[in-house]
Length: 528
Image (cartoon, rainbow, N blue to C red; front, side, top):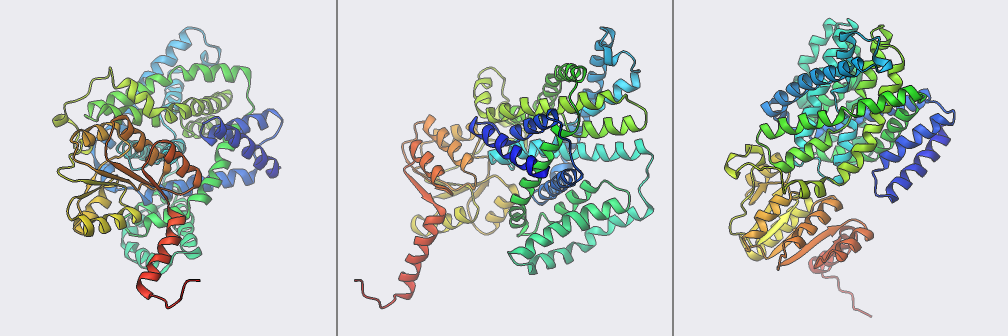
């Protein structure tokens, strides 16, 4: 049966990709199609799906700055949104009940409030997938969305604890000693190398030391994986560890999206109720936008953050399932919420893909704050008198920066979308600022001063580089632009967009190695 799942997932994902939709849309549709054909989820598929979510949260933790959760925009925004959305959804459901909607007719006010609470959450899995596919996980709006989602995960833990009456074991107090083990975990990570031992160590931390330990003391397993990841986030190899888990995590998450479609047999009444629940989704999105905008984020950050969170969460299935077991909700709502969650993903996926275009149109009529009044985390960027701009200060961008400083002096500036990474570069003497290079407003500010003569696009994700190149083209930049590419089709696309030079990093690595050898070793070999 698992072989059928693999074939269906591949075919549906491939078709979705060719239709310029995220593959996860195909996986969801494959799950529904298989369910309609009489297939059901298996224990193996469920276990693999759970492992995928656990590894996802661990990798989120590896990239998360704990300070972001302490910002009032994060904890305050998440709390306010949860309270307001639950209250408004309850009123809306109460209104539907008064209109005589069949499935709601027998529900009491507290049951409606419980259903509204389940719908107030957004999907962590979907949001992270959408951000990763666009290469904007560390963008300002990406960081904001992830912070909101983590706070919602904390709310989820509290709900599950109180609703089941299951109090964490007294041994859970020992979890407060975990920070004392951080130096030991750092030392092991230093010695783990760069191969299979690094992967095994990451899996051990996520599934055993994190999820397993937390579950053992009566806490939510996924929260343990997230916290263990956060504890390692400051280590220099945290990014490398995250990359080693990438393919494994992506494969396991296919099982997660398949499992949603396979979860329940669709029914006509459940489908109609799901459509009704989808009518409430714009309320949820509007609340996100208003709260972000009230925190003085730019229109772009508020809008793209809203689109990232514009969905229902798989947590709604967990809440409704637990409520059904406790006798709080009738079982037919499991089907309705499962369909509503899946359909919300199908709606949100293309919206996220078109996010930048939607912002371009919306920015014409949405009111923007004056630059001096913007949130400190969302200020526009001034590049000063620099002549060379490097976007993306990873290993390639850093190497290019150091070489160009030797050639041209202090006319080089780098832009890095991770604040901690930008700070490390500045501590090492480089002129690097924190900024989001995928931001159209950023480009409008940069190109307007006409000082930049050379732009190097060194971001690790091809979509980020191509989007940045499109922004340069829109502003008639008269200097030179060079970009890196991982694959031949990426290189071809960059040339189609008018880049002056595109460098395939794998091909260039080989030729660069050969030049380095010849220049430094000067082998005494005569050419034929």
